Image 1 (tube, rainbow, N blue to C red):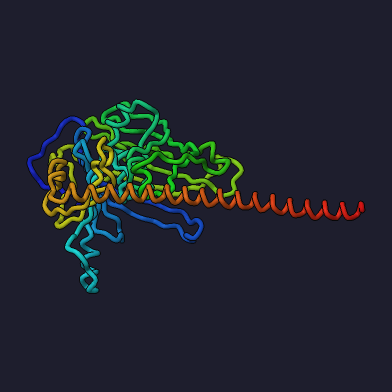
Image 2 (cartoon, rainbow, N blue to C red):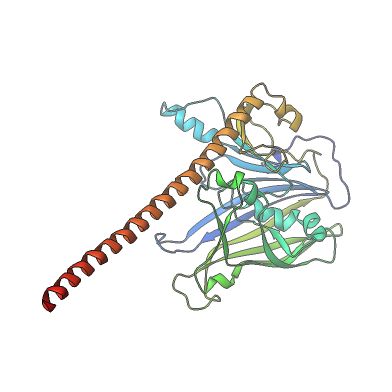
Length: 378
């Protein structure tokens, strides 16, 4: 079933390449308005070829058919098949549009800010060896999406410490990531990150000094033809507790346990891009980190295969669409700045008026007091 995602070609295999299947059990403990714990099960398959990877997932009882993400070594391609939702909308006479899938393209090779909860965790568990072995600093990508898609979130990292297994494919045994207690924000979150740096902020004490963000632990391993792969792994994500006196006081935000079920060292296909089920609506961010004036995303549709960089730039409406979006983002950011400048001017005028009013009141009181004093002395 899972391997049906891949087109079966001749088996090709390099040292360290593999295809795996398994499932992820995810738990969200009861907290706040969530009176009961939420339990999810996601089945997955994953192919790793060198530093490239492809991950396919489906959630039991989830709203969509399946999700998949992969990289060609330059961009990350993410697709969600919505056939089941399309069928429901057609049955209710509410369908608009032709697409049976939605997609994003992001710059880089790490699945950051994709709208799926377990794919980044699977990448870290089975596909992060190239990244971690070549890391020049003690920082790793943000594995939990913020929902914001902009140049800052695409490059967001967090301080961490990790240990890699000493045998190929050199995947992590343990990792601990920390939040440094800072918060970046913009006056206009939608357009601001594209045109200006963030305004630095701090979390309320005691978490302004930082706290443990998540812990990863390889619980058990399996050896397949000399490769030590995680058999069972677990991510525990933490969050601050409102009103706490110490930063060590945290609540469990989520627990994700990954179980490996099948391993195959014979990779069925050399492709690491998600399959395209039909008409797909795409919001493409692949140029977001370019040095040119590429702001926001580019909208287009495709139906049989992913477009490469040159093909996207050659789209008939690419330049027109790009210029329109650039103008919109710049205008929104400028409008926000002008609004804040106007608000600041109003505040200044109000303060000045209050100051002048206070002086006038003082002058009136002084004149009345002086008049009464002079009258009393006559």
